[in-house]
Structure formats: structure tokens, C-alpha cells
Image (tube, rainbow, N blue to C red; front, side):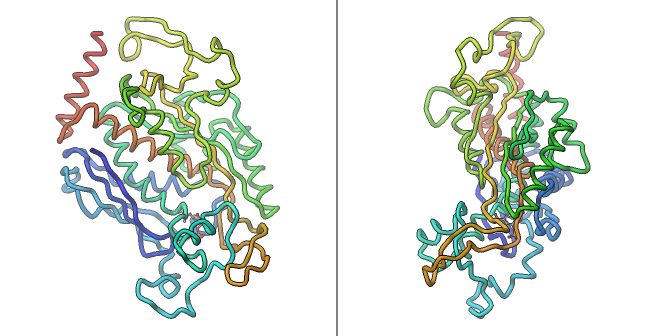
Length: 390
Ligand code: EPS
């Protein structure tokens, strides 16, 4: 079974990710993993922190001579900013005068709920762990999941479909999304140049007004065979697993599979994807006129591209802060402000790719099993043959 955890504080020494259950014999390409980490750090509207960090996956265990060995994988990502925080956040008691309190909770952040829950007098420890810095660790192990999926013919990428009020109206086809991946300079990771210009204006407006802006990303999984996930039990449905995985990302407030939102107000004839047959097409000849279902019917992948959208609320740290209350005095004050991002939609899309890849890898390993890549691939090939001969 594929299992994973992360640990680490945003301004602590390092982030750590654990990934257990990967078959042995998967080639690990360090440059690919580090490029995924780089991709997550890009995007117009990121704050000063991204100038400090240059994320790199330091693999501690589970990979030897360039391949997984079936043992748990541990990955360490250094926080370069730690050198500025050794006295403010030491592991040992340290000097309390040097600790950095977060005196007033930010509306929308975990600050208040977390301080109440863990009985902290202020929110420093809360934001340290609730911070989206943690997604760097997910992206590192998500990259390994992507490498596994590649061996099974599956690719996972994302693109941005909206920032604030600026949106791409048409469905973006896979080749355009694959082209975005090649870019060496990332603005808003949008496949439509004119929409991207409007998106940049939305970020500029937020920058000038001391505000923040959210948006929508779409993750696309290409080459997924029919049959991952199942309707047999509620917690094995692929759409439910993907929704939980993407919703677990900081600031994601809604998840949509395919055209799920519009489907609720459209007639059935405009929603469901009609079925045809062309012998040489796809995994087994069955075709669809369109993909409103986003590649999942009845909690099972249906052989079409899987499309999952995440709706991101604006970052809750505002340069022009909202009203709050001082933790100590209970007097009204403005919410705390620390250096922050203004827009993170492209970065969140990359983190969501990792979550989708980890979810699909888990489902694929449940279906195909295997303790070595040879065994997993053989089982997968056997199933693909069964589909062709159906
Ligand atoms: C974050 C606040 C900012 C972001 C951070 C998430 O960090 P800092 O407070 O150090 O400026 O840059 O994101 C990352 C560090 C990252 O790697 O994505 C927050 O409070 O959620």
C-alpha cells in the first residue's frame, strides 16, 4: 500500500517527506524531481521567500544506485530561511525574548482555530505548520509517484484556468498543457496568452491595493486506463479520493471533477458524454463525443483524461490587514502581517499535480500490485491486453 506523510515547520530547519510502498526498481531521476520543485516555486505574485529558497530533494533512504529498492523513501528539503530563524524557533528552549510571536490571528488562516485547539497563547506554531511551504514536501514525493505512473503510460500536469475575475473559457487540450511544462519562465502557467495578460493585471491590482487574489487550476491526468477506483465502496471511489487529495491543499476551498459545477444546472442531455465505437481507438475502442465527466464515472476511471479543478481562496495574509483581536489584550487590532505571497494559483496547481499523482499511483498499485517494477508493469500490460480483447 502506498502511504505518505510529511513533517516540518515553514521556518524550521527542513521539511521531510516519507513515502512507503513504492515497488523496487523504479528509476529515480533527480533532475526531474528538482524540476518539479522548481515549478512549484514559480508564478507571478509570489513573495520574497521564493527568492531565498531553492528547493532540492535530498533523498535519504529507499533509493540506491539510481533506483527504488522497495524500502521506505525519506526525502529532506532544506529551508534556506532557517539561518534567519535559529534564535526565533530553536528546538531547545532558547531565549524567549527572541521568539517571534504572531500576536493577532489572520482571518481565513488557521491562526485562531489552531491556537484554540492546541492551547497556544499566540499563533506562531500554528502558521509554521499550516503554511503552504509544506507542499514542497508533497511535490518531492509526488514527483516519484509521477515517475511510477510514467512507466504505466500516465502523465499528470496542470494549468491555470482563472486568477480573480480573469478566466480561460475554453477547454485546454493536452498538447497545450504539455507545452506549458516546457517553459523556462512561468508567468501564470496559463495556456491562453490573452487570458494570462488579464490574469497578470488581476495580480497587479492585488499588489497595488495590498490585497490578495485566488483562482482556479486544473490538473489533467493523461493516459489513465479505465478501471482505477471503484463504486464498490464509498471510500474507494476515485472521484472521492481525488477530491480529498486536492482539497487537502492549503487554501483550496472547492474541488470539481470534469464539468461538475455546470452539470448541476444543465439538462442531462447536455452533461453526459455519448458513447461510440471505433475499433482502433483508445484502450479498447469505446469513444466519447466529449469529456464532461472528467474521466470518471461511478467512481471509476473511464479511459478519458481525468480533469480535476481546485478553487483557491485568496491568500489570507494581507498587506492591508483585516480586522482582528490581540491574543493577549483582546483589544481590536489589525491582523498580523508577515511577508507573504499575493497569488499562488500556478504553484497550487503543481502541488495538486503531486496529490493527483500520489492518488493515482496508490490506485494503480492497488489494481496491479507488484513488489518490483517488472511485476507491476507485467500486471498492467496483462490488464491492458484484457481491455484490448474485451
Ligand atoms: C506562507 C507564507 C510565505 C510563503 C509560504 C507560505 O512564507 P514566508 O512567511 O516565509 O514569507 O512564501 O510558502 C512557501 C514558503 C513555499 O515554499 O511555498 C504561508 O503562511 O502559508
